[in-house]
Image (cartoon, rainbow, N blue to C red; front, side):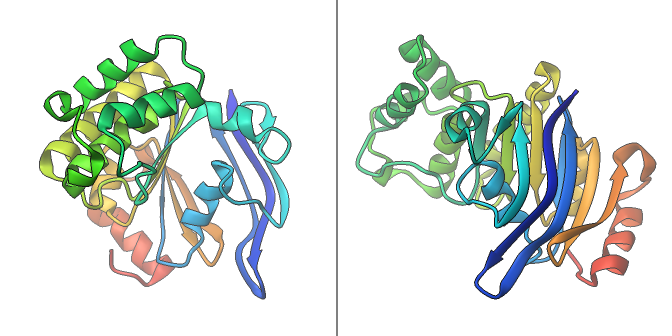
Length: 237
């Protein structure tokens, strides 16, 4: 079943066109990884999917909801892990998660907050202010925030950047666990080796459009895919 449908998407910032007539369908439960050089349009695409940006033209439908017409419904279905943690520095870890639990109108707020705090290994720091956290701890709390409402879709923008080893292993486990739950995941990455580990489908983006789309099962080694990437993009990631 198609969960995300993008048709003839365009996005411009002034005279600069960042996404050019892009179309894509993502099926339910798929883990899709998008590679590409800086400026290819990867992060812009994720921001449009998560309703943080509006497209210039074209359509994006997420689980039957148009991102322009029904942004609240789309946000209920999406979790985002990115460079921006979307956390409030002056609130504690628990207070941050309770705030988001209220936003998502979760009925089991206290139970769910305890569950995700434990999942990311921050039980002993749950009452500490985020301002006192290390970068790795903030990223772990950001992971908890992203999965708090048990989203159907997880968007990951260079999710391993800045993670410590503990946080990286937690994220690996969550990505794999979400696979068994049938959660759809779209990850943007520069790290080809890491990106190939769990992916079902691999895309290469350049100059606002996709220049390569292949199933992971069709690619042999990391070196083989890196050679394809370098040939198409001319960027050694």
